[in-house]
Length: 395
Ligand SMILES: [Zn+2]
Ligand SMILES: [Zn+2]
Image 1 (cartoon, rainbow, N blue to C red):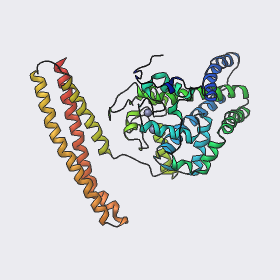
Image 2 (cartoon, rainbow, N blue to C red):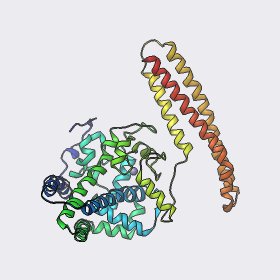
Image 3 (tube, helix red, strand yellow):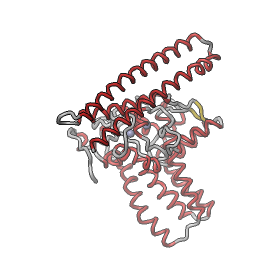
Image 4 (spheres, rainbow, N blue to C red):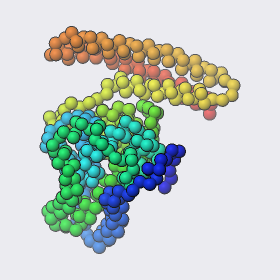
């Protein structure tokens, strides 16, 4: 396995970390078992479509419980939901065998806070593909010891406390009980145990792990380049929409990861759908204009990199490009100050209005906010055109 960006500062506590026996056993034995058992069973038995349907359901249930429950609900509190759904995600998340909500969320919040830090990010990609994908769970690294100080909102939840305390028992119960029950219902216990139990677990594991490894290695960075997280539409297909990881690292509280309406993010669609039938509420959305702002800032950075990266005498084309960028920067500054003034005005108006009339304030400001958003889009377009024409001339 290749290791990009090997850390230069490996402390001995990382080198001498002891093996984490139970996770290591599960993570090593399940793929090996699946590699032999699945082909053998498919070769020697006819598997009915009902077994495959159970497999698909269990794969979706465990995968979506991690993205919709563990990740966007408990780690980021991107929305609120009905207790019935919390139970559904909690059982599905246990079925996915990715540790208790406490461990998962504490580690994940640390990942966001210290992203890419070789000492503190529990699955830092700067320690290489293997470490960020699976290696971080196989040994007891210092970065993998969570003290739960960053999840005070979760540790007080009695149901989550029970899941944490009896986690091992819950894992056995779900991973034996659910396939057994479905297997009995569809009349093929062995087939369901092997496909909906074992194969489903291995696929679900590695698809989630891709988010920590590949989504920090391959893809674009439209919102920020201050960390390694990437937007990758192909990985979104395998991760229930979490491939839009660059957006997620910049705006982590948004319930959407694929923020554009056309981006494949089934987790976002499920949360939105639940909100429409009253089962989810308080959906957190970053305002469109803030998203546009981040994108324009990134385009300026790209333009600046082009200017800085040019060595030798300035050509007329580059000189013109530079002037164009400077002008655009001036105009952009103007848009930002208009935007800030409008935000201040909104706060002031809301302070002076009664709660029931707040929507009228929003309505009044809506057109002005849209005008700012259009200006932001215009800046993005200008920059794209400038970059395209420069690249055309340099080619
Ligand atoms: Zn990440
Ligand atoms: Zn996250």
